[in-house]
Amino acid sequence: MAVKVYGPSCAAAKRVLVVLIVKAIEFEVVPVDVFKGEHKDPEYLKLQPFGVVPVIKDGDYTLYESRAIMRYYAEKYRSQGIDLLGKTIEERGLVEQWLEVEAHNFHPPAYDLTIHILVPQLAGITPDQKVIEESEAKLVNVLNIYEERLSKSKYLAGDFFSLADISHLPFTDYIVNNMGKEHLIKERKHVSAWWDDISNRPSWKKVLELYKAPV
Image (cartoon, rainbow, N blue to C red):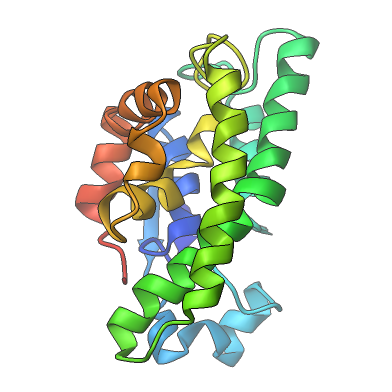
């Protein structure tokens, strides 16, 4: 039975889709239009009581939160396709560390830039310039740390592609290709090389081709 992925066009869902493609897991998608408020519909709230995307249904099993879903499938299908968790407990620790860094240090300012640059463009409202400046400053500090890390290893958790890298794909793509902030990535030699590597992988290209962003 194919895995059902709700809300495939939204950024967080794309993390999940990359893992499913890398692991060659059969899936089908269920569109959820957040701009029409479909994520707040009563039927959807039965699956995700907080009203956000994505959610997956795998038979009778339901799971939400994109990073939890990524971990679940990387573990469940660990021997299928490439290992995204690391081959040793130490490597797994570093994957988890950089997943946490992404969630708590990279994602908040990247998300705020998206909300205050891309969404106003779509909705025709005036962006909050102060939030944009503060978010960019925070992201600069984060990416400076990434530059140092990536000067020592090809990928964030080491010399192997992992969930830690995948988790950065959706919002870094917005930064580079949608909001005119590509200099944040391109002016950092090692961050830029890392981005060129992970963003040119067939799995990510397929996700972008099949599921256009709502912004």
